[in-house]
Length: 316
Image (cartoon, rainbow, N blue to C red; front, top):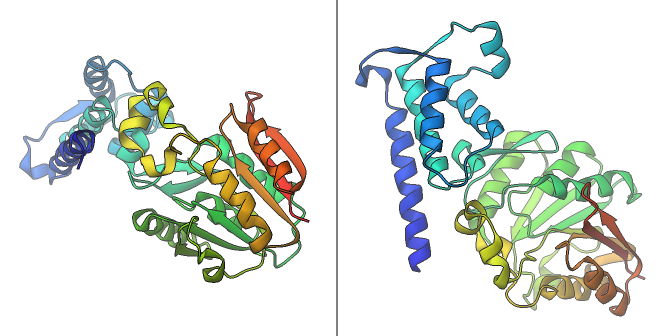
């Protein structure tokens, strides 16, 4: 295990210990009640020790998760008091955040397309930009009833699960190299009531096509697309806590897209569709490579910040 991984594991272990102690029965503490303002001040004092402070929204998430009091409830119950155990949970979460742990991992949950997805360090935290993939499938792909969708590098399963919840007539599948990620994906499918088939498969395996239930109508992917050289530009929350297997593509930013373009004609029906999330700096490169690979009807979709975010295409 590398030094970075050891430090990361120790940090996560320390955070888990603090949260575990905070969740011990209230009787193990000196019983006392605290005002919401008092706890928020304590939490802010903890945050001041950190260079990259949690956002006010992150504070709200941790405060609500640990105390059960929403911001609206505090407005209507300004004199509400909070017990010692809840106060300790809140401060423990804040300390983990100060240590660099993403608030979504601390809470064990992230929102995607309005659904609560379980997350941990085995999977990427779902981002709003990735919702564009789901929107494209639901609104622009013109899939027929009974269409089959394959998500490559499914992680938490947020893409196929959301599609399945929004349109039960689409048969959704997801594959990933990580067994730990697939465990999270299956838990999410069960908790959200989605019917999605997950398999542990390697995109670069020579036997992949024979292991898939081909053909599919649409292939979706948010593959690793950050060059290793850019790791120093990432926040500590991302670089030190989210899974590198799902983030980094080595020295070749087109590595995964080239393999997807090669795979597409083998697993898609005639005129089958492809949609992939891309690095904002390499969208045009992905599109050009798709064209040279024989794919047609290529298009770039921009995100709300007008950055190149999704590339779509079709097979002949």
